[in-house]
Image (tube, rainbow, N blue to C red):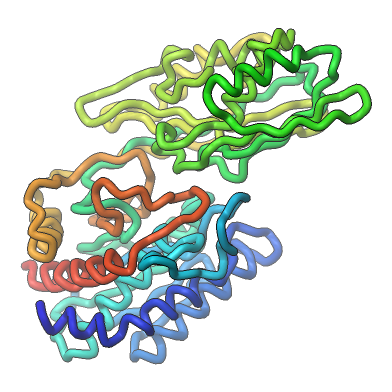
Length: 451
């Protein structure tokens, strides 16, 4: 392993510069240029050009996705990464699209999810090429541009190119993910509210960290409202505009699959409104059906199995004509079906004046952790880290592994570390990047040597 470590040390400046270049693309979803926006196009062009210069056979699949391929053989190993990111939001200590390095850590949107994973696995593959390693399988680095907002990229790839024989997506946790919860999303729509204006949240799949609302002064006991927020140390700002309160409530963002790591500004807003005697149907409904919980207890959908519990997150709230709409993102246990969850949500959340609009279901993923491919990947992790205690797991997040056969999420997040995924000040340490590359090198060797 000493040769691999020396290679990484010799190239660490290039590795970090490439990550910095990739982070600079503001590759959130946009409709300014089909299919997913001009910045996603630029990010894909950047990586395809980089692979082309290294001798990869590259292909652009109409900017839905693209890939670079090396090696030869009938079987195909896939490395699946995504170049799109969630919106940065507010509150960063530095420009989220200008990566900075401080105290041995890189900060910027995507340095872990998933541009960091892309660069780490790319350099693992590059090491093997540069050192003359012989591939008896083809290795294809597949890069999509729509993972955070719909998975159309991987669907398009599979439609055009088919599936893979072995592979991983560097978009999860070590030592690997053998199960992914199902995802059910819906909108709750109502016009039954005295709220004048409301807007909060940047993404459906993130805990809302800021919500702004306009409410008539006569309808709200502002002292009770403030004391209710202070009860949980929730930050806020209140501005008086003639006869109205212009209120902003601040929370803490987190990935929707782990809402317990954040503080949902929307939920705390409605909690405080309810405590402040704001006589409003939407407020009563929200407190009754959702409240401050994140496992669905209030809505009687707190299901669980041997592999995990249901989580519920409200990511966005906004107005559309006369309606107020808020989004619900549910990650449900792997032994449940999407139809079961949908039926329970419709049954428990439907009410006169409140419409449940279903719009997305993704069924769970579950693989045998003792299958040859998963054991080969786990072996790579253990050889590099000597960590025999950590075990493969089930997560709430959904990855490309759901969209293509013979793939699991594998790294790059180490156990017990908060990388602030989907949050402000997303980070990764340089030492973690080095270890990630080492593991991916060993993983590619292990997969290449499988029969």
